[in-house]
Image 1 (cartoon, rainbow, N blue to C red):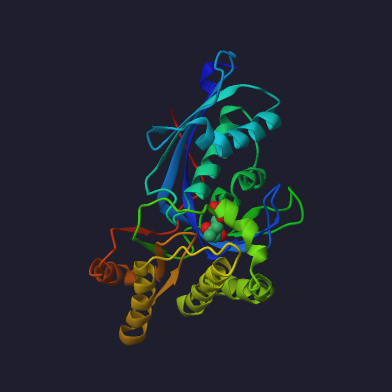
Image 2 (tube, rainbow, N blue to C red):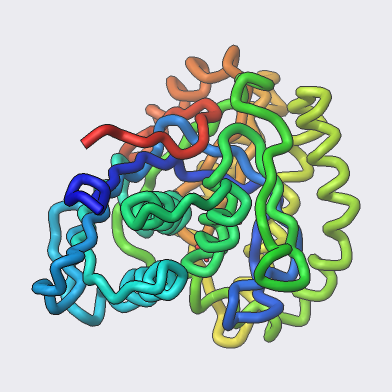
Length: 331
Ligand code: PMV
């Protein structure tokens, strides 16, 4: 294999879940408790280059994230993922990984989703492994559950599955289907205290977890139908309810996880007031962090951004329509 074939660069969009993944059925291989549905984002993405050293000279994996070289401790989860790729290819090459996000990391925009998906796709390509999107989705899931969904563009459902091979995402509709927007109000750039990776194992300690899971089949049906019909008034209330249900589980687990900041609640209440008083059809959802994602149609984006700009504590606004699946970039 020539040197060129040992390197690959890939850009992958993050995704925002409408029905959330929260809680694991099998932590060892990241099998979730429930199916989840998301939209892949065009404007929040990770670009990752993986270069494998086939000469055997390189002693350790070298990983640079947003310009910062990770020490052994910080690199652990990524090295474990590189180990999975090495095992799959049957090689023991070390890798150089350079990864860049165009959005703040670890603050409720899923850098782990685009990050692990990009690492999986670039890593496999650079090894010459020819895996289809479904197998790549299963591989990415092992790094971070939500990464399984970023293997596809547009609107995506991750089937919880029963084993490593069946717990994979599939595309419901391409990004052309519906010009739905995620308007992210960034209130904090600080990294979160408890990562979602450790939070998933706590879900089962909440007395509310079983109730949420039991209600999800109906919610998943509603969300699929709302996307099919491009009906924001059907989609909105369901996604708000599941975000609140997930945060209810987080808040009532042992130990309790409280990701919201005062600004988080202020934006949630403002969104409801704008909707009820002014008919602005935007609905919130929140991941494992304090930032608020407002979901709306294209026609509402300008009015929404204008209003968010007037709220104290909103540091940055990211506006994204649905985006494509992984894009290879020529080196
Ligand atoms: O993929 P993880 O382990 O970072 O979990 C993602 C969890 C949420 O973002 C809160 C929900 C989701 O489905 O994206």
